Image (tube, rainbow, N blue to C red; front, side, top):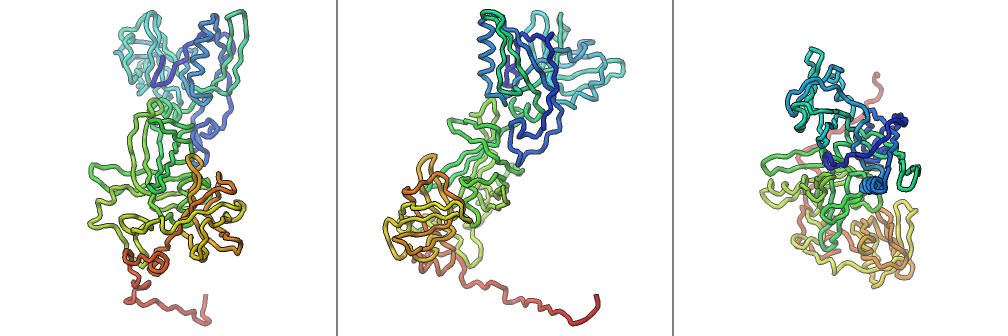
Length: 490
């Protein structure tokens, strides 16, 4: 039996054995296996644990138990556990979603704990589960409980009615313990700990999980897929890797509007957001955020689609400011700023119009210096040219190397001819993780956006979109001169 997409534990538990046991847990989400400590707040819910003894008196029961456990995602995946003790004492029937119980101050305490779910059993009836949504004190020695789903045998009360708490739990460890009583007869010992309400909401599909897709368009054609969930998620045959990533709030409306969104991610050398630090990446990067539930990861909803505008390096975090594609509809003409630098992305076919193949070159990696700050590599030119030896010729460009999952892209901070045989030292924004000496690398020179660079380096001034003669200061305004007076009083 499943409830909210997760299985209910329905095996013969020997409750005569000691079952209640207190587990001491630091309830940070990283300790329980969901999310990362770097972004997640401390949990405040009190949890309880159980040590269960399950009696498996036949080969079929043993096989069924093994099948149930193997169907879970792992130790950190939750399932429902009916508590051994009656949760409430039924007093009177009302209807299939309301019933009265003997007063136990549930109206004041029901929402204080994660176990707000009930498990209903009765003679000759299939078990049912529902969530408490409200409890009202009737001031007559009874309380009225409201549940979110109809249970047919509550009106009238069926014979043998039992109402138990339904705990959402996970295994406390990865150890299987079994006592062999006889052939085809075992008792298994299972330790579980109750999960806080945040986990229940996520794993049962009541709270969404988010998928992040970053893309660099052709000719790079690179994609990265991440999820903020605890483990990797496969959605529509695409693997989204678990990562320390989250996003802020954004607005939604019925009219197209320019949505802004901030994405926070933990720093790693291969993360696509590192391309923007310490200088902007010379190509547009798109980002799409999808929403789905763990119960059905193939049904997704796009909650944000746009481009990465800038990235702030905050030490162990990267903070990306993103802008939705709706921004283009607010422009009465193609977007540009009145500034001395060019407004176009270099090599953009419809604007800059530079042909990348005329300027890039292939090199061979001859040395890695990942211990340098910033990291550097030495490369040997496969096609020697004095042009490539110019100081910082490749600065503000990027390199590409590797294929498939080994592919890497890095922003080039600078390049220096080191006097060796056809050898350049290239400074990178982050170290290469997969590349090895002897590997082929593509170097693409960058553009600083200045008019002189466009004309002299690329011979492309006819496509320059900037205002090179714009004064850096407003000549109509006079700066205020300040002078320190001599002497005076404090």
